[in-house]
Length: 278
Image 1 (cartoon, one colour):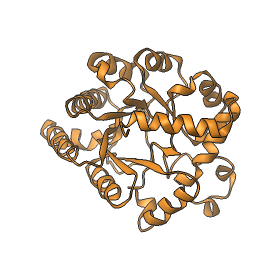
Image 2: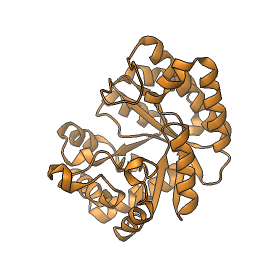
Image 3: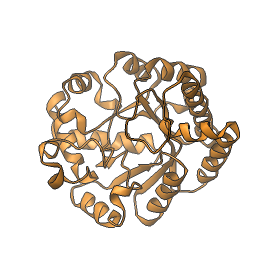
């Protein structure tokens, strides 16, 4: 199986990465992509990938963290992009990501005076476009983050999109929205499905509509823990881990009427194609 989006570079896994990867392999998860969300986590993703076979990195600035460079000025934005481009030279880096647009108001954030303004969203759009251009320039895959920003994301995608990104791009943890699905179908993007498919009815109905040829599986660990772990007490369930990926495959199989082994096989091949690992 292929966990196409797992944050082994996050603090939740400090000192445990070897154990987490070993447990994933025992569960049948042989391939993992670790996306960055800012410069430090992008650098850490590269370090993790270099240390583990069939673990790969993606590098980029998450739209939420564009706030930090925006506060420092345009020059900081440019410096971030320069640093990300330098990381793209590492052989273990298979994608730019996770990058995109986000209008969600985060109550828990490291950024002081955090607020969603149109100026901030404009900066996100610029940085997202810059990341897309890096993916095109370096022939890398693209991991797209979006949250509560459909109109923004579709506009930037339409402006910068190039056909060479087809079957090399994924809408990570795609919101259940038919406009996003239509864009993905028209332009041959993959759709990432996560642990929320085990409990979110809107997501379940949405995934029923997505052709299996477009689906890749992702845990987004340590987030989006699937059932039955989600219903356990917080002090006993622990963080989400890539070893939980079979639970997502099982729910997708039930929703779409496939044998679970067929879902695992098809989504694995989709992940290999997405990240150009043939």
